[in-house]
Length: 494
Image 1 (cartoon, rainbow, N blue to C red):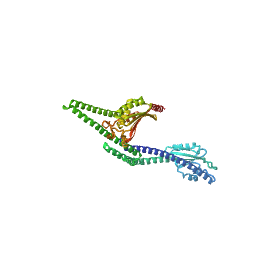
Image 2: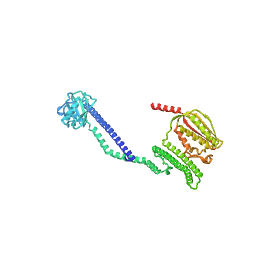
Image 3: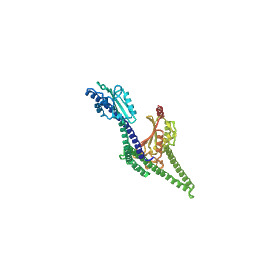
Image 4: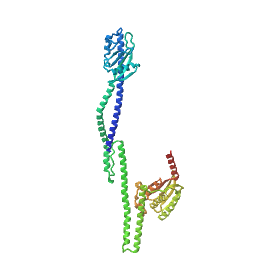
């Protein structure tokens, strides 16, 4: 197909040639019409001049004597003849009987057939305001006629002048010759200029391609394309590519952190598991010590299985392969169930659980996933709340959404950490956690956020360091979703 530069040049050349042809045809038609109009005007002017000459000669002389010995054809004397010989075109004077009284030398040079054709057309003319075009064998002429009203002995009644139409065809022919001579040069110059301009226009794009080629691995994603002043289109392209590279840099960074964090999370339990298995297999290990080692190994296997299940859940969610059931769910019943579970966990941890407000609310969603969302939020709140603290659970309806809130009086989250709490494997400083020895993997909030988004809602957090945190899961009510679907269907049918 060739380069874009070549295709643009060829397209420009084609458009220029087509425009040149159309322009030349328009000029040709206009020039032909103008030349023909000039011939017609000349015929009208000359016939009027001949008529005036005949009238003037008959008025200057007392009368035109018809001396047949001095006639050129018949009926016109030498004095008038000398005036009429000034005109180089075809001139004919007719008497009332359509007999030729005078015929110019150019008319006399025609063949008998052409002369008969011309004089016959002249005799048939009756309208003095119009002209007639006659095709002769050797020429094409335009006839113009004027009637005479001369008193005296003159028998001249009609004056007829025929002007050659060759200039009307000669001018367009000269124009065509000129266009054929200069046209190829103009086309060649325009193609060369278009190729040069296209090259200059695509020069910034070539530089952009070179810059993109330089950013071929994850280590160069920190670089950005130079926008410059390459035009609005290329500027938008550079901005879009920079945004894409920025997203790729973020994704690669997240992937590197994910790999490092996953390796770190698996490294410790694998090391402990290996040590426990080796201790259990040692011949010198007593039976009770071997049972303890196997129990600890089982705990590590369970921990790694939980990690793998969480990673698998997030991976399937990213690929869109994790389906969410859409059933009608009474959130107030689910919230009460979660409160009961939280009170059991709170008794063990010395944390007080309060539920001052739980209103009736129905949503469409997956009961298992929503239970996982709410239990994760409650478990995190209890985990990071010191003994004697309080965790408040509430369910309210705000703007056609069910807001499930979990507020604790725990250690809180620093403002610098808030933007990262939903990132995978992110955890606050474990030294501030009372339950650091049984801390999670840092995947729970990421899974919670995905569950909220999968139900058309969101998960928000408000927190201050040392003053606790408030997590709120917002899920649209079933009535609001059904109303929105009905409105969309009406718009689609309209």
